[in-house]
Length: 354
Length: 169
Image (cartoon, rainbow over all chains, first blue to last red; front, side, top):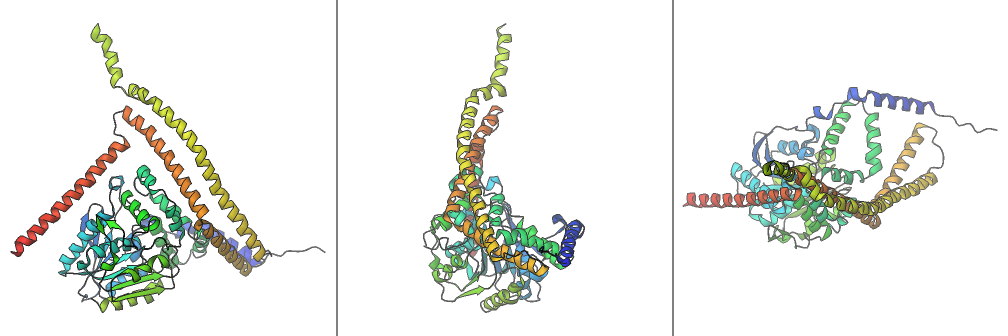
């Protein structure tokens, strides 16, 4: 008797369909240059070196009094917060009646390798906060920091608490020793002095390597298999390409800033111990005494919840809220969960304090 | 006669070849050091790929144990793919999270940076031979610009504060 292995005809059918989708992809998919990531209308209200302050056009007749300034991360660009009309963080807040400003850190060049934490905290962010205060005739603003942008915003809030009415920390990078991610493991073993001395700014290629070791098979294979399977689904393809374009566009990080970030956060863990200095001033987290809202994603594989949550317990605020969401780092800000759960909760919290 | 004979010498003293020749010893030294560095680099590079291939082999064994049958239909293929991806992602994440990977990768990058530094030094010799600034000299300019910008920013802020105080009076 011979063992006969019979192949299901459906397998052949699936394989043929998949091959056809791969061949037809160039006809069905836009080139990256054809995709605009600037979804919601805005004006550039101030520029400083390579950074810009964006002010979004209101989507409601009346806005709440206290404006919100978002300090986006240093990795990738702010577009993820406005990546698609149906998943836009910014648009949702505008629809809830908030006056939204965004900080675009721009693209540093070799010339910017000496920019440090002080320049970002007491230079750019402070200048833009003052601009927002003047433009909206308020003495205090609401400040939101996302990821590494929240590390900068946290340092700023401790040094300038008089300018911040409400502080929102979204997946903040705070306690490097508790971080359980692959990124943290690589950061802890990095000779950052040598890197900055030799290459100047942290090159984007290094960041792409770090991305590639995060769930490499899910992200490197399954994601693209799904893309080709759904190549005829216009909505899926549009959404996929927007995120891919965003992922493939990360600016360099200024050398001195990167050096202090790796050393003080991941290697020596100074921030959470209230031992970090920015521009010669001690960052004491207890000085954050205004209402604070911390948002953490349980499935975050870039900034683990253990790295973000200690901020909630370290600040001096009496009015503080910690929320955990069953999603990932990007899912928390640009997904249906963010639209249905994260943003309504944030809006409600912010409205009560604006 | 004196002028004629000294002219070629004068030309030679400002041309790129003379400057390059006087620094060629440095180039040789750098190349020897690069060669020595490459040995260390290769050691960490081999270890890097050894760690990846060992992890791959272990993960594949786990997949074979969990899904020993050859998938026969579309549903089985999907299940097999899910098992394969989950096991490989878990095992590789465990590797990337480990101290042995972190240390080796840190050393590998460090050696690569040292190689880059030697390469920069060779480039500097060529740059100097044609009277162009070296990387260090350009860095000095960047540092100076950064420091000046900071000072100007502080002065502008001071002026603004004084202006506000004046207007308040």
